[in-house]
Amino acid sequence: MTEDFRSDHFAAPPPDTPLDCDSVPVQEPVRLIVVSSRRGVTSMIQTLHLRGVVSAHEWTALQPEPMTGKWMSVATKYLSLG
Image 1 (cartoon, rainbow, N blue to C red):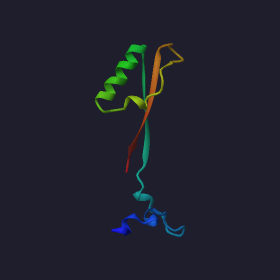
Image 2: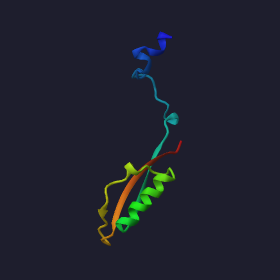
Image 3: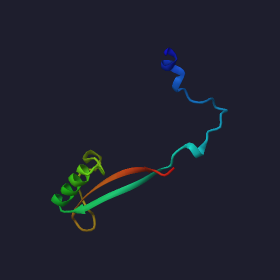
């Protein structure tokens, strides 16, 4: 049982060991953007949070959208494509 807690248990492989690139999952970033009134953006963030899509703390602070003057918030999720 003490072998399970050895400090070298999580050590990196030696430098001459080739890494299997096929076993490394590809992380694809997906950006979600909500543009609306302040109330609309906040409501959508809460809805997506309650449905388990994106946690409320993952969104940026509300900021004015440059083209329309409406409000926006952005969240980035990473999908495993492996």
